[in-house]
Image (tube, rainbow, N blue to C red; front, side, top):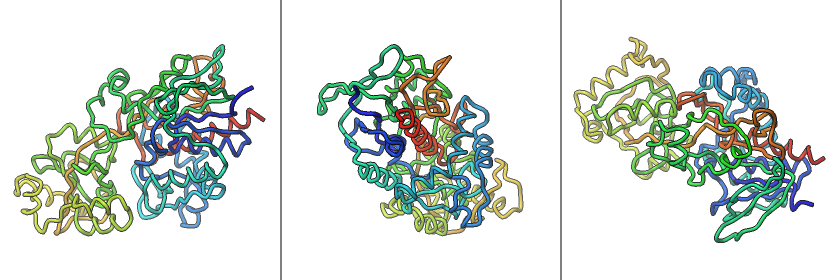
Length: 452
């Protein structure tokens, strides 16, 4: 006799999606969250979920397919430990988006005005606000509508298991007390290990020095529980970074400002690479050049992005995006030489006009050359989440050298990511939520089906 059919550990996007899928498959579910609120890293994201071949794309005249998404993802990431998982998640992406919208009323809209990093066509579906916290609110409302309990302040301290099969969890916390819950299945959805400096030094030492801007609960203990049962780690040194976190505000400087033609300059007032590599892939380039660093664009780009993205509009309202009437005023704000900055912007304008080749290889310049008045955001690079995790099979079950671990599932940052074998350059926009929600759907569906 068990206490509940399925236990979900973690109430971020992956965990809440797993709970919905398990309920739809006929299981009784409880969600346990150690933090004060649901959300995790999903709440800090833009809430963007890739879906290839959705009816929303068809209505917009966008020709897309799962095969095209898989090709795009692997072109960005290169070969890694979870190539098959990338293809599997791509294959289920359209159904995932439409199930969330149609069955559970999650408000996702196709973003058609630009393609995002790593994608050859527009395929990201996001809340109208483009805020992950609104995606979490919709998922949480949908879960509660199924009468599924979501218990916050309820940290899981370990797995219960019997002869290799996971049979439940042990809860232990100052508010929750200590007790055990038994179940037929446990879904680990507590994200990765980016908030655990000791694990970063052990598994991904190259990024242990990054400032961390993700959810504080991403401490990786659930990975260790599974490893103790024989699970295997994949892509441990891969990560999602962000090249331009607004300083000192702490919110991201929307990379749309760069995609529309903005540039990053260093403490010498110079560009230092191809910014179109993406916000994650460019983070290491920022760390490799002296600061302070600034994202430079113009008022046309500022107004365009602010009209589409609430978080960026809030940054502007807080004074985090300084408008400058001239290159000289811009140079004073950035603390760099006016002549150096003038040369940098003039060179960028030339290649953005198509009159020359960019020395860094950049070819995509959005709206074209920048024009005064300019806008600058002081920024720093940061780490948002790790992409290494447990190797899983097609049902999101962690695997040993020989077989899946019975009764155990891993989703999102707990599972091996699909963003390359090492570093941050393999990250395509939406990869984190594709793995979180996509694996959550697979895990919950399989766990519920096994009960039947």
